Length: 184
Image 1 (cartoon, helix red, strand yellow):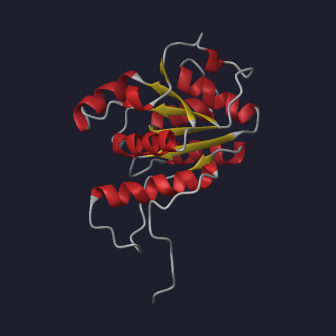
Image 2 (cartoon, helix red, strand yellow; image 1 turned 45 degrees about the horizontal axis):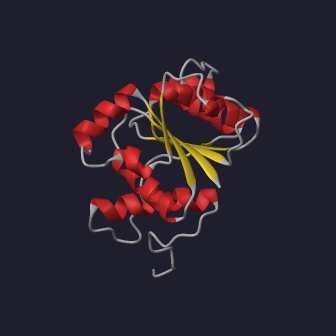
């Protein structure tokens, strides 16, 4: 399996780190694109993350000549984690002037799995409209809002819930969170 991971400049790069750790454990080939703002957020939130070491390949978001920018590059899915409002707008409106948006557009054009993990809150009407467009075009809109039925006690447990759900969508078995059992 080969997965593209786009990292945008929104808070929540801890999710991305955990996702890449899990994909590496599963020996899944990862192609990671890091936006300029994501680099700054990584330094602020998680300077020890070492994302580049977790990925098989790393690309600059401005590198539109990268092999992954072409539909001839075979890939199984793309996850944008975290996704910013700007990136959502770019994808929803086919503004493909950066590598994350270009690869996401390729996923939509080829009807391949695109998981867009929006981190922003609250959401404006234009953002909701763009997310609706993405859903209509075939993307999976994935708000980064963890469940609490498994009674998380740490931030890591909440991150594990989210990453476990993303892995579920990718068809990758995992036991990162306690699944729902009717205990009411």
